[in-house]
Image 1 (spheres, rainbow, N blue to C red):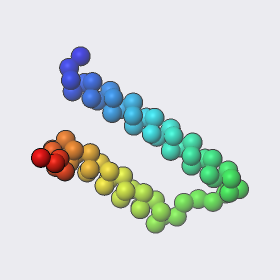
Image 2 (spheres, helix red, strand yellow):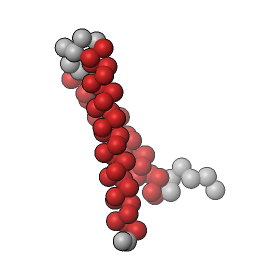
Image 3 (cartoon, helix red, strand yellow):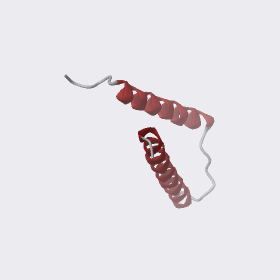
Length: 69
């Protein structure tokens, strides 16, 4: 398998594991608080911005930015 394919598989597996962990933690916290509270639109937007920032940091890693010489 080519190197790019391996990176895609590793990234996909890590993304799936992170998604399952996030869903588990969200459900657990929701159950502890009674199970009826829903996130506000502002909290969802804040989470989306955080995810975009994380993706930008990953791209910067690939571009070599932030690497100390």
